[in-house]
Amino acid sequence: GESVGLHLPTLSVQEGDNSIINCAYSNSASDYFIWYKQESGKGPQFIIDIRSNMDKRQGQRVTVLLNKTVKHLSLQIAATQPGDSAVYFCAENTNTGNQFYFGTGTSLTVIP
Amino acid sequence: KAGVTQTPRYLIKTRGQQVTLSCSPISGHRSVSWYQQTPGQGLQFLFEYFSETQRNKGNFPGRFSGRQFSNSRSEMNVSTLELGDSALYLCASSPRQGGGGELFFGEGSRLTVL
Image 1: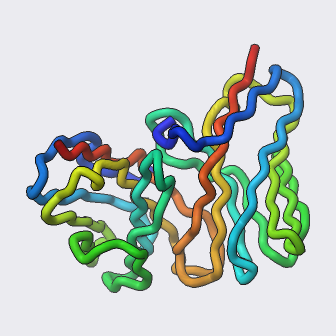
Image 2 (image 1 turned 135 degrees about the vertical axis):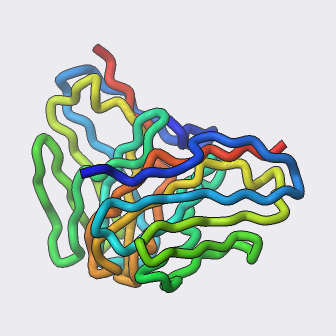
Image 3 (image 1 turned 45 degrees about the vertical axis):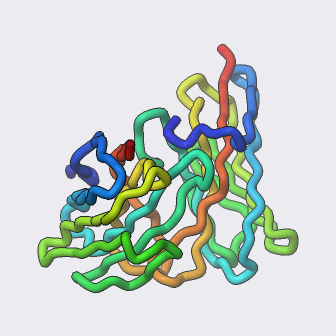
């Protein structure tokens, strides 16, 4: 994808397996979090979000877990498919407008 | 509903030149944010406009500027280009200013500075 770089963590999973992507955020005052997916040549695409008053939220095949104690966010993708191959970013917001701080991203490769 | 449209998609400039990038948000969205994406720094916030006013600004030099028009379309300008300005510039729109809610991103403008 557009964000591939030397420092991008990578994760390879077999098709059909579950994927877990982790993110450590920096600001304890952040109260809103989003996971984005970015495919090559495209802009980031919203996957799921969660507010700081929750610790878990589920979507279609995706679950986000939030641990505010250790400032950790994770994205779980169930039954990973080849179309899930992309770079995944977590983003945090402290309710100061639409200024988000993005993580470095994780490149997910699904092996057929 | 049409998505966020950015133009141009690709451009090449030389050091010292300036560049203007354009963003048309989703119809009805009044907030437009700009982000710079590079392999080394990742996605970094540049600025946000809402109702023609800059609401937030990231940590970028004054060579980076922007504006928003009454129809919510936005432009960003980079003057006196440097090699390090080579990046993907992403525009994102939102119907609200803050309070949570996703950003809808365009596909970006890929700037190469030679």
